[in-house]
Image 1 (cartoon, rainbow, N blue to C red):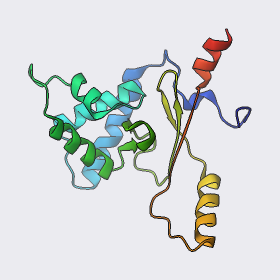
Image 2 (cartoon, rainbow, N blue to C red):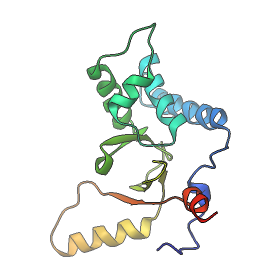
Image 3 (tube, rainbow, N blue to C red):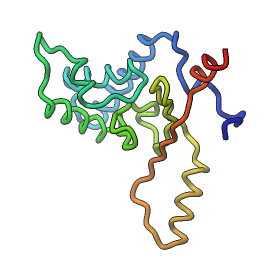
Image 4 (spheres, helix red, strand yellow):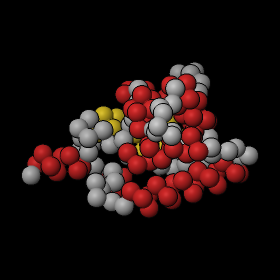
Length: 168
């Protein structure tokens, strides 16, 4: 798997890429998604999403809470969790159980399964689309009489950028 040529390093954003353009594009998509579903991206929800988008990393709820400054005061944990619940419900954010953290969805508004590559060095997360893997796992489950409700695949390892730094 480590030598899989079909996996490009572009799934892990280059550390020097334009975060602002990346974030702005994702926020525009989020606003369209919310409008299409009659939901509202409040300033608090937007700020939580912006923090996740800027990080390109899995962030815990308390890390998110520490990154927010609403007029000189920190939000209560329940406010952050409510914002995260809203964002997850709309498919704008995913929860990564293996690291108990959240990541902005790289494919918001598109039908897709949740498959993640999580770098254990820099904590960057790549959301990848590999329907064959999901289809195979669902097929195996169904052959055993198991009805799959949700399929999330989380793979930990080292991203191309960190591997390159370690090799150089």
